[in-house]
Image (cartoon, rainbow, N blue to C red; front, side, top):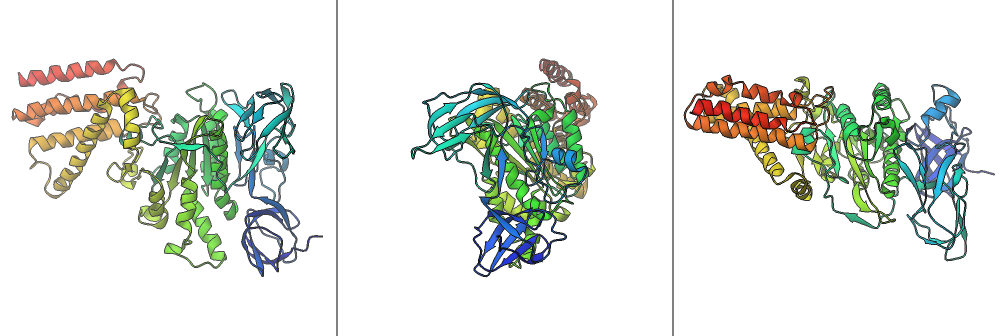
Amino acid sequence: MNNNVIFGINGPVITVKGPTDFKMMEMVHVGRENLVGEIIGVTDEYTTIQVYEETTGLRPGDPVTGTGNPMNVLLGPGILDNIFDGIERPLKAIEEENGAFINRGSQVNALDETKEWDVTLKVKEGDIVKGGQIYATLPETQIIEHRLMVPPLLSGEVVEVKPDGEYKLFDTIVKIKDEYGTEHSLTLCQQWPIRTSRPITQRLSTSVPLITGQRVIDTMFPIAKGGAAAIPGGFGTGKTMTQHQLAKWCDADIIVYVGCGERGNEMSQVLDEFSQLIDPKSDRPMTDRTVLIANTSNMPVAAREASIYTGITLAEYYRDMGYDVAIMADSTSRWAEALREISGRLEEMPAEEGFPAYLPSRLAEFYERAGRVETLSGDNGSVSIIGAVSPQGSDFSEPVTQNTKRFTRCFWALDKALAYARHYPAINWMNSYSEYFNDIDPWFNEQLGEEFVEYRTRISALLQEENKLMEIVKLIGSDVLPDDQKLVIETAKVIRVGFLQQNAFHKDDTFVPLEKQMNMMKVILKLYDRSKDVVAQEIPISKLIALGLFDKLTKMKYDIPNDKPEMFDAYIEEIDKKIDEILY
């Protein structure tokens, strides 16, 4: 007989009076509809529960039942090409069972129990296996092999192995006897608590860049595989669209996209786009390597808090198989707002702007789960986190943005003025930064030569110099500047419009390989260096501009296909020829 009953209800926060046998962070079922909840406070007088579903209709006296387990997710084949809510309930299956709306207390299983998978066993009787070791594989989608791993905390001798063949999710395919003589059955799935990071052998240095094909990111502010980046920006600056581009084109093996508190139409757009988009690496639908977690703004606020942890746990699971995973969190500000709302209902002492005092530690918990690691099975895998931040009024001094900067080493600051000028990605090159240069520059030197880093340094210096000159121009106009400074402004304009600005709807410009990015910088700097020779001869800069070279370089991103880098040689020859005509 369950003696634990609801005493008080305050939105998603439920209290149970009197001593109970519940444990901190235990998953519970609340009310007669078995709503999913989690224990977030225990005293001898009251137990406090956070409910992840709509609490309308609950009454004092309704039962609360413990599960004995922490809040966890089911990990196994069927995660990819699926869409879940914040607590890993499959929205496609719920729609098939209940229609367009999610019924409270819905008991649909996270993964399909009836589907049969073509399993290939990798162990035999008598083998000694340890946590993280791969004991079987199966094709989850046409491009991703799912590797079934021994649960991290289990090891022992294999005493029974089923033959290769078709098996369902909960079928036993391997039996292991541990050191105490206890037998454990291994199926096609396992469970893992979402607030606990999965064990690894060791962390590795973040020495390989995550290639995105976006010039302003790859060249100016790169992120490493296993790194963490923040994309802060006000309403309409393109946070979601930037994350869409990164999800489509970055060279991660698997994408986990968490829509946390975002508008429903944005998430439906992600679904539509990803189902139609063909993965450039495999010529298969993008959804074959993507999992979506949708917790839209009209869903229960408490589930936002869980959705971030659900996403990172799924990402770590695929990392442990040896894959490079990128997780897009859109947006961590909505997640922080959920923390603030629940904190207010718990009557906790608020800190800056009403956010709870533990906001920094919660952000750290999330971002610190990024990393490039050696897994328990000996493979290398990584989780890269790219989190959008939505500061109200584009105020980057607010707590979520400031605390996020503490735990990320890459900061892509979106600018409202650039976005309104239709300059995308609207990443402001003056306010953004990356701290991964020292880690990944050796990779760039090895793959592209030392010129790449040199070109980037010079391009950045020209943009910095232009920024200073524009302050003067705003005050007294550009006519008073000497020609060498006018040349800096003209060259920086080519860099801004021809290099940093990118067109997501152009077949060659939506994704640009590193070799083309390097050649574009090379040609721009070639024009700048030769133009300096002209200016040094006191030839008016108007003659240089009249040659049309600056305009031509602005359009080279469209005129030169990605697979024809040899065309840049013609541009260099034309620059030399036309400038020689002026000089000699």
